[in-house]
Every structure is written in C-alpha cells, then in structure tokens.
Image (cartoon, rainbow, N blue to C red):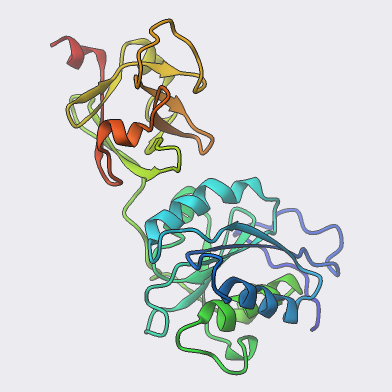
Length: 294
C-alpha cells in the first residue's frame, strides 16, 4: 500500500511524525467480544493482513455485552495514556448490519475507528476540536463483508490502512450528524447543589462518578462539601485508598480522586457498590456546607 503523510487531526496542524514515510502503527482494541471465541483473533489477523508491522495492544475485551456507555467510559479513561497518532479500534456494536454508520474520529491527536452509536461520545465531549468521517470507501474493507462482523471486515482493515498512512479523507466523507451520548458533565442547581451520577463500577466495587476536579474543587471540600447517594452521606475525602484518618470504621465510605481524574466513592475493606446498593446511573448529590448545616 502507498504510504501517505499523516493527515492533520485537528483544524491546525500538530507536530507530524519524524518521517512522513514511516507511519505510526500502534493500534489498540476495545470490544465486548470476550476471549473465549475467535473474534478478537480474527480482528487482529485482519489488521495484520493490511499492516503486518502494526503493534497491537488490547485495552479490554470484557466490556459487558452491547454496553455502549461502559465502552465509552473505558475508552475515555484509557486513550490519553497512549502517544499521539495511536489508532483505537472500539467495537461494541448492537446495530451491526443495520443502517448505523461505520466512522473514523480524529481527535486529541489520535484516531478512533468504530460504529456511530455514541461509543465515542465522551471523547467528543473532552476533545472539542474533533472531526468525524463516515467510512464509505468500500475498497478499504474486506472483499466480503459479513453483516454480523464489521469488527473484522470493516474496522480492522480501515485501522490497518490508517497504520500504513492512509488519510482520513481517503477513507470516508466528513459528517456532522454523528451520534452523541448524554453529556457527561453534572448538573448544577441555583442553590449550589451539584447533581452527578455513578457512571462506572469497577471490579473492586468502587463507584466512579462523572464529577471532576473542576466540579468539586479543593475549596469546596475545605468548606465542608459532601456527597449524598440515596440516604447515605459521604463526608470523608482521602488521598489514597489505605489512608488512615484514625476513624478505623469497618466499611466506612469515603471519596477519592481516581486515576481517570474523576471522583470515586470507595469503602474501607469492602466494595462501596455493595455498601450503597449502588447501580450505574444512580444520582450523586454534592452538597455545600450551608446545605449540611440547615
């Protein structure tokens, strides 16, 4: 395949590869396929058939089946750990074979390939300067496209073409009417009450919220802001999970800034989700000190 210089990912040109003739070939995979079947292996084979020198990295293949929001969060938490020009192939695709479009997103100096079903919604929200392309150049697809496996027959070959230097504009047509998710940002009431939600529960039972450090500032915490989930209050903020504040209360709930840059609710030696009977989508209120005193 002919090598092309990498296309600008934003409206302004960012720093190009050291050599435009040596494409960047780091490709990540994120799916709900699991590892018991042949699906992941077939996708990797399809990528390597186009770009034999590509380096493949598995983010995860254990997204709950057809759970687009879980995939969107996982991608949000992971993609900035990778260098510029990384190609992320994300496939959680309940609409495979339907009229939903295959797309390529260029954002944050990286590429994202997958279905137009909201999976990249949190990337859109974080990376305001993004561009989205409908992948409609079938010559870049597998010669025979299965109606049930676009991961292998559409997304993998396109990722391989990108790794070999193809430009986004060669792969499809830019669009503006792509699918978004509900905004990740929390809601703020006139009285200062902030309403967020639990957007992810990890394997340890920690409840990840959509609250960032811009939403819950150190000044707010210093003034006594606290969280309310259902009928439970979380008044303690810790720097790390094992921090000892002297209370030594079993299953005590506390808030902590997680590695994704979002506020998490954890519990001492216990899964916080179990202590709260929490579910994803559950509301988390942030109350200022004045509300607590009234």
